[in-house]
Image (cartoon, rainbow, N blue to C red; front, side):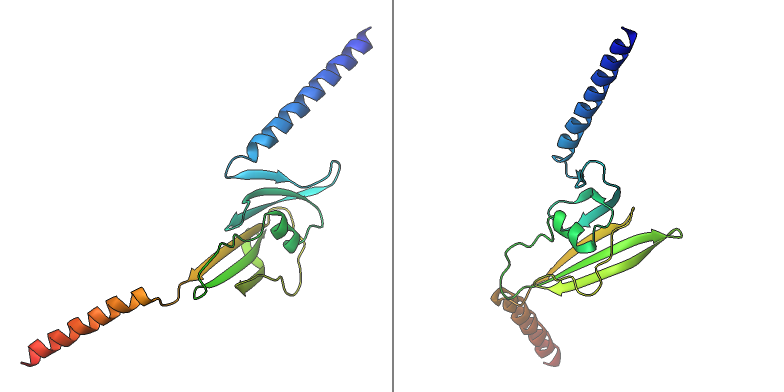
Length: 164
């Protein structure tokens, strides 16, 4: 009798804990600083942080052996919005790792108007930080010409007044 009661209590509390954990995980996906778990039950995992201009920034729990490019892919990759043709986009993806109390750069991949991971594809370790930075440089547009012409005209008039 006691064994059955103990077994029922154990099953009841384990089921409740798992249900609460799943509920917490679902709510975390709705926040801006989310937690994502991409591991199967029983796999050994590491946690890494993904920051910057990615579709899904947050804390990622991934299986041991996950690579730099795989972590970038599961985070949704760089946010690449539509841009005018004359604008140049540069995407920089950097992987930082803490060792001996210092943060050091492990991998840096930079591309203009696209992104390919070239060279070695390092394996993610616990505590790694993946930072994606997107910079858009605007080209000269016809609206930019008017302030330049106005400034040149003003300087010319000032010089003319000073000379006369």
